[in-house]
Length: 262
Image (cartoon, rainbow, N blue to C red):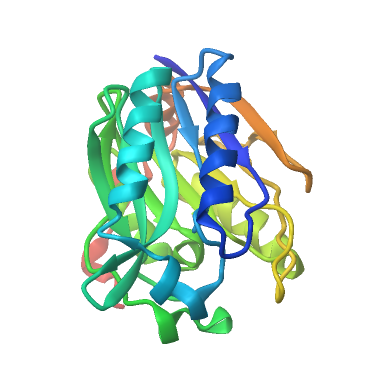
């Protein structure tokens, strides 16, 4: 089975959800002209890293974002891995990924498990405590957010039940773009899965962002990679390749978890 994916590598207006909703609607409409199956957005696309103003700009229970994205998914007949949003529940805020199917149904929410202290996330957000597993077009998938990819044990936890896709959404800074590329390729090779990773571009008052969104196959081969401009990155994935790679080098069969001490 083959799926066509589109990654929205966009700049994000700092602390301006209205402008960001408008941009995302435009880019999803553009991507859908290519008959794609899955559209992927970057991390915190509604607000950017305007963390000190989350009391004002976070989305209450995610309701505005959910309504907006559900309509776009249904209208454009696409699955949407909707990056992540700042979601307020009572007086706390999570960095939460939203997943929608073609019918506009919200099928998964995942809140970032590992908060990134270098960007003061722990001062303004709370950690998620649940996995990022879901099914997309009948295929087992997982979603994680940015800093999560530095924790291979967390990624492997998601891969132990024949998971085929790893979706990564991020606001990864330019000064560590080499880490971004190396970690994504490593996660694809060691888990023999497709890695579909959408990063933002542009800058905010404190950071320059790296872009380099990527689609990587289960051998670690880069199918498509963007640079540092605002763009839509397209690619085709062949799900039969996951089984072929896992049959060729059966790492999941050969694991010895009784010997692994964390």
